[in-house]
Image (cartoon, rainbow, N blue to C red; front, side, top):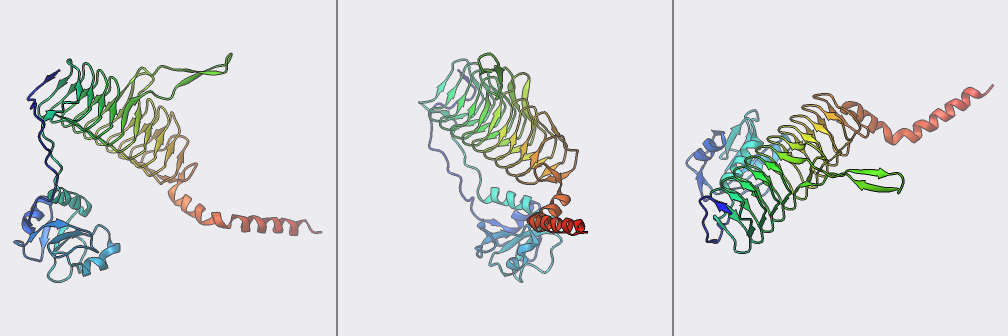
Length: 362
């Protein structure tokens, strides 16, 4: 094993915690907001929801639905949009910005910085002699790194992470406990795997032996390729292709319990929410949102910018930019009208039957 800039000792890790006080003026600058009202030199200590925020806290309003609560909040400042007027109450500062949700995310990072992990390799880790690990690596207890693995700088592999042979990983890789990366996968920079993620398990491929009636396994010889700045959440699986690649492109976000079938592609900056399932050879375009429990049949394309409502079933191609729902899917506006009618179908059917009987009378 060759480790560049390796620190052999394993020190106690620093625990992520609140970073201390910050003035409202500095906070506004760091989150890209305009300070409106209040005293810019006032210090704040943290961020809290509208209903529980106290003096010294910053709170946030990301939807007009809670504007009344924002006017009554005890917080020292409210992150809100530039368009909202008449709030917060007198004496409470407004941090106005174009994207309050993004500003809130940045504020959370300021008050609760990410935990830092000391460089070093735990005594119980097993790292093959041929593996190459970059500078400032943190390799935790019972981690296994296989032969001919290459990992870039500033990686964090927490307890029981397993990296199979032949894997290539970029810089700033972060794998939480029990994540598994199978053989020959390729991973870019700034990728994070939450607990229990499995990359590169065999795709579900079998051929029926008609004589014996048994299923014969089709060897999955491809690989999984993950782009840059991708995050995959707990217990999700990305299967290796039978041939060629299963690919997750730059900026994609994969939620918990998502299954990406073999040979599928997920485009840039697409969002797959919990329990989404993609059958094999599915192509998901760029900037797509698949809400929870959406299922997509294999060998079809979901175009760029498509939004699919939760629990929908996609049996075939979907054109760019559509918003769809239902199983099978239909235009979202049509689906809403259909759902409104659905509870009345027995009544409508009865009326039609009675109408038919009236017409049959001589």
